[in-house]
Image (tube, rainbow, N blue to C red; front, side):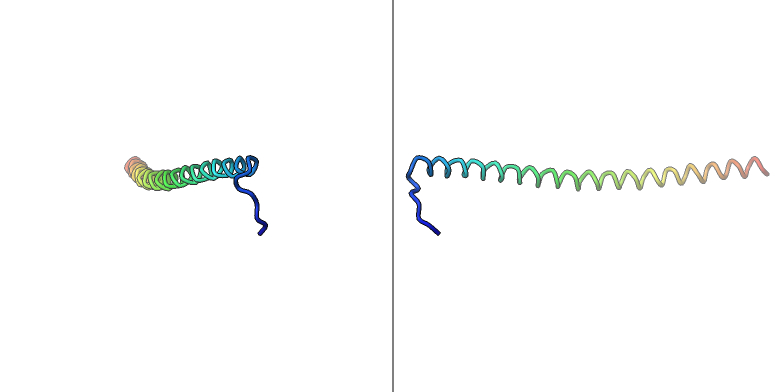
Length: 73
């Protein structure tokens, strides 16, 4: 690796800009972690709702079948 003058204005500006960009990357990674956690949480809630709705529809179907059978008898 070649030596370079870290104190030169151009290199110092590049280092500063690189540090700024790295902080933005870190911030984006944190936001991605938060969104991933929220996505997993919403998926679990949706699955629970879906299970409840399927049970509800099952009872509706059973009720409808009972009504049809009652009318046929």
